[in-house]
Image 1 (spheres, rainbow over the protein chains, first blue to last red):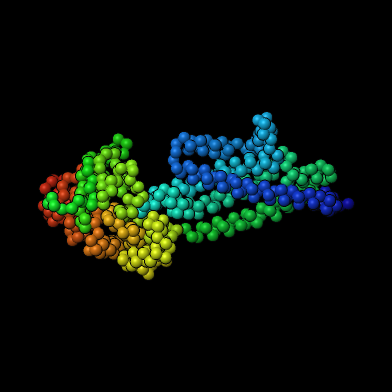
Image 2: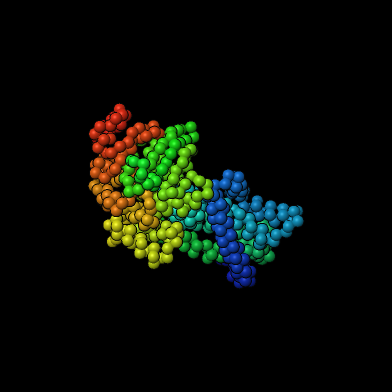
Length: 226
Length: 250
């Protein structure tokens, strides 16, 4: 057997691959569901926090800044472990799926809040003044004048951050979540062969490469119209 | 002004404004009659822009009383957003909404504040753009307009709400010299239509031709006021004379 054949048999073993393909596909479904939920809840919560912060209620803003800084400093893995193993001690038990979703949503929320907030504050005071001078209320100004401009500025940093955090779904393996990487590593242990890891890598590429390319397109599109 | 004249449309009394330990306005009284055009001049830092911005409460005065068109502007029960409909404001830096067309800029408050239907707002906005000579630019974004055109759209945005008073805060200071004329022409036609206007500006030629009264401010106080000829030709105060001499050199 040549070295090349040995390499193929080790890393691209078709027998092993065929056997574990259904597992990997199942893991993909979990990863997709989880990623979509994280994007929706993380970005949604981040926007809500940024809007609340714009009301400039001091104690509330201190709280927001504290929460956001906390979740931006902690490694996502630590948050997942804390929620999964810590919450039951408080009488609440969260499944691996819920723990991972909640953790990464909180992290994405925190980064998204900062990005939205930076966008909102980068709009000149003159925009506020012009709108308010015509009789628009604070809320009408925020939603009709400030946010449409601010959101355009946030597209690029937000897509990058979103991709980085949704890839973190792989961290769910530590709490035995059956997403792509979890499925692949148990397949590796069962088959004594690393081929499932190659399948996992391929699965991530299939999922995230289009997102990365799409993000590039969105960034370019929003950049023209400034 | 004799005592039989109707209530002034703008009456500011004893206006003080502090920014931290900076005392920017030190008890200013200003009354403006309906259809009057008042020019406010003075060195930078004299408080003239702050005074203007107090009139529609973009700045909160530290003390004093302000009534505009019969509305007590500083009464906490006053619906400030409703009151501001009656007070148009034009800014030095135009402040058009860059994500909207010229028409969209004018329509926004018509829709959201005046509560007009889309078709009605569009008609009124188009008419306002017509008044500033930009009916053919309705579909242009601010970035596609010259500075002079942007400022005229900003004027249209304010007058579309049919305000009782218009405030101009250095409306031509950010413009290239060759674009100033078009904005002044619009202001002149507003003046001819009987609009009450308070203008912070150093356009002396315009002041001389159009203003009823020139107010000179320095260090947070009104130093003197009177008809343009009097203020520009024979000011009573040394500080006024020095200031007029300075801006004349430019």
